[in-house]
Amino acid sequence: MYGSAGLVRVAAVLAATAGAAALVVASVGARPIDGTSKKLSPRVGIFFYPWYGTPARDGSYQHWAEHGALPPSDIASSFYPARGIYSSTDPNVLRAQMTDIADARIGVVIVSWWGTGSPEDVRLPAVIAAARSFGLRIAIHIEPYEGRTPETVAADVAKLRTLGITDFYVYDSSSAPDAAWAAVNKDLHGVRLFANTALPGKAAAGGFAGLYTYDVYEYDGSSFPRVCESARALKLLCAPSVGPGYDARAMGDPRIRPRADGVTYDGMWRSAIRARADLVTITSYNEWHEGTQIEPSAEAGVRYLSYDGAWGLFGKTAERAYLDRTSMWAGRYLAKVAPGKAAS
Image (cartoon, rainbow, N blue to C red):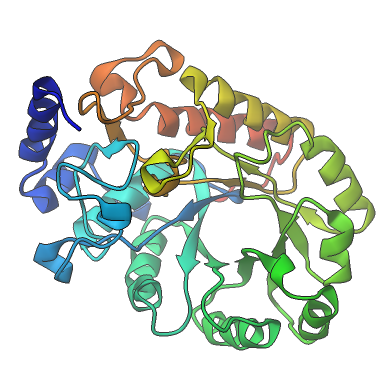
């Protein structure tokens, strides 16, 4: 699987990230809310996954070892993280990640959540604390956990509402009938639920407050203007999802949407702005399995892709290319579509 040069590069990444807890903080210059200089937008959110683990902190490699991968040199991704194989339970990692997100002018962290008692549920309080220390808001991505129904989601929302969370994105909402969603949505107050669909009529039939697309392989942005226009006609919020590309070959999925050196990401942002989206959601901060992440990635040999070439950048300067580009696009979105809607 690896040539000798590839093994050397992976080893270099591993060596460089040994003692990651100390290195992460030192390398990103993490700072709390009173030191955040850029304006954050509550109308730009990013999907965030707190499901990673390491033997040292969590007893095993969690998610990095999926689909037969053998960490730390072989992971379940077509890319390799610049901060190395990390645990989502490490407070230093969380702090560094929230620094990334705030620096990119993103205002909302949309946390993947797999039901009460799941690892993501247990880790949620730490994610909330880290995010709020940077002035970031929290929303929840309600995943299709076993036994999920519209009724259980209503109970989940009531529970999570006590944590001060008011926005909920329901992945694969089409798995339940529209009438069932409408029945629970009519009794939910003070919160907003977003349907995972590009069909405004379906979201309206389910009584949702809005819709989002999430899938950046299926949706390239060309339909955003039409979708958002139709959503507004139905008094729905339109929150289309933009992303850098898609590559889940490490998980056995042969489909690819190439990053094209940043062209894919730019095109989706332009479409969201042209659509005058009410909110923009980003797929994703760190879904490494599907290769949609904008978290910094390192060049680690022929086994892994990297961000080299994105906007003409290479090496260390390319590792944060997508975060830096997000900051630019979030600023343009604020200026063109949502002026006066920033929150510092």
